[in-house]
Length: 589
Image 1 (tube, rainbow, N blue to C red):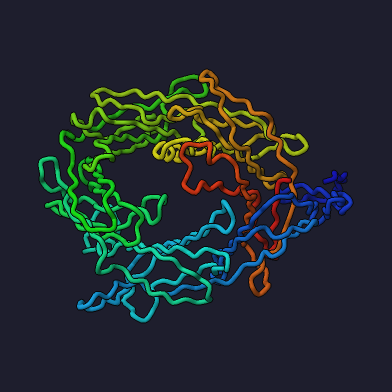
Image 2: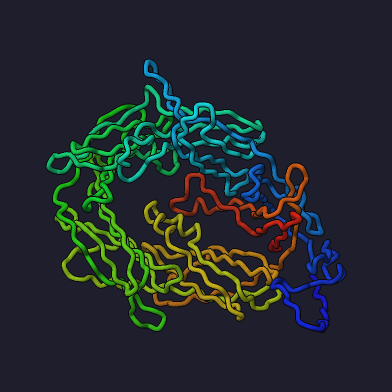
């Protein structure tokens, strides 16, 4: 875009000028007209970037008659206008959730309280997809619906929705008010096409021939363990995350339990018995590779020599910016121990406890002191976001009667400067460092989950455009790679931007990594009008524009990518429509 010479005019009196981007043009000749730019509202609109884009439009929460829409990017005219930002009417699904009628028992038509989750993959690669979660009523009214949900209609090229219904009452301990739906009925999952404007749906829970798991939870001496929450974890499809796929039961004094499994599961399940949160410290008991397509009986046996509960207090410290050793306020401390191996058919016991360091960095946790577990403890520590102290992962923790001093490693500082496309420093840019996919997907499942739980380091640039972010140089023996996300203030007329996969030099003596100046690309100003199906402008609709990911070699270069190896599409612009339905965004050229 061309630079216009703007003349300041002195007015009588004082005006409160709203904060916003400075005026960059007064007429179209001040803009890059050769590439289609036009001047409007003091902004040079147009000359949109090339590339593959997609858009997600979400209506305001007040418009219940509209649903989100996603699509590949409509054409952007050379003057910056986006066409076809139109929201659509929903397909409304109404119905009831009832128990399956199993003769000769009398049918119970009372609706069952549940949580319904509806998902559908994105229509574009790496997109956020659709997800809706809603609770249903347990109404006794036999004529009315117990749920009423609005979904984007299923198009000719869309996948069907996946609907998961989970009965309510899956608390850690018994409710005290009789059996909950979760104790009576397993979850159910089914596919749903939403092509019509209105759909009536009866969802039935339970069944006559569903597999069951029965058995007992026992102490090492053979007695029953009471108040344990027992459930089966499994997968609805291969490679999917584990989730609860059975009824829930709570053991009585005899330790007995009975579970009903959902149908349509993929592979075996994991049987889990969790001790009551209000009781004494004890491990959670696991049994792996239990067949999900047939009924069976199992005994979960607590290991011997666990000892008694003991409180261990110790300080969590680190070296602060001045070089002094200080307590790490707010550090999250987790201690775990595992007895047994999933490779066997025996019970595996897993003990876990967490605490947060107080204002002085001291933390107190409750552990078991028996000889069967005291040498197996492993420690994790995660300091607060943007702390100069680093994480600890899978560190042996010796249980002793004395206070344990714990010194966290020092993180490394990523330092750099953010410039606009003309090379001028940018103030007020939010800079965030996150572990890159290359780094995260190089870990096995457990450390991968740990890395994903570390709060992102974030800072705002001063007028010099400089930034410093503290990151862990290594985690669990692997050197780090980080993505830096830049989100400028709206007045900057600069686009959001991501610099991917910055590698930490393999030098343990380094305390700082200096990054070359980050020059953000020129911003293309674009706009469009969000309309409802009647052609009426929609205020407060959110529009997100994603740059589609290009296939690369990353998935073949890392140790443990997800099964489908989804490379997320990059969010490059977002905005909300005004009272006239107009949304204004910037995209990087």
